[in-house]
Amino acid sequence: MSERSGYLRSAGEGDAIWFLGTLVTVKAGSDQTNGAFTLIEQLAPAGFGPPPHIHRDEDEAFYILDGELTVTCGDSRWAAPAGAFVFLPRGIPHSFVVSDAGPAKLLQLTAPGKFERFAAEAGEPAQQATLPPPSAPDVPKMLALMDKYGYDPVGPPPTD
Image (cartoon, rainbow, N blue to C red; front, side):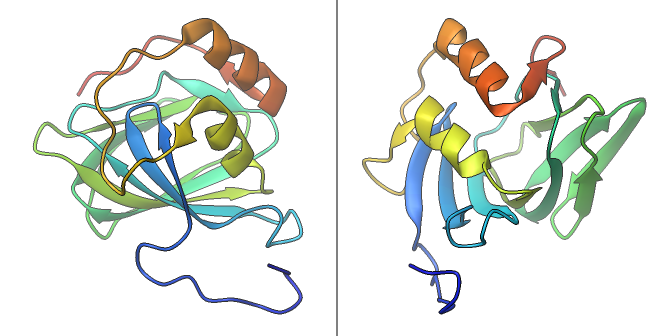
């Protein structure tokens, strides 16, 4: 697929990845956007939240389609229900947690693009378009990949 020809991804289309207990569907990756951005649709279970981390090279944004997140960015903390938009600048520690009423469905935009490569390398191709079976993350692998892709962990996973 060439960024020069344009394309359409319908509902349910895109590379599906089981990533840290979530379902990630890549709608646009670095290859399609000439490196400008990555856009993924993510389905995350109740209580899911990545550890606080910093993106060295990327800005990140979420548009919440369903469910609710509690998002932290630096010293700020926001409740982000369906319809909310959150911008997380590079260089600032941030995280989120899905409310206990979850799951949550959101669009995640990172710029410049490369997040889809991190998710693919850290996760595995989804066997079906559902949340994966629960499993413990491979922490040493995750830490190595975070460094490779320019992410710095700064704390334990958040709680709501």
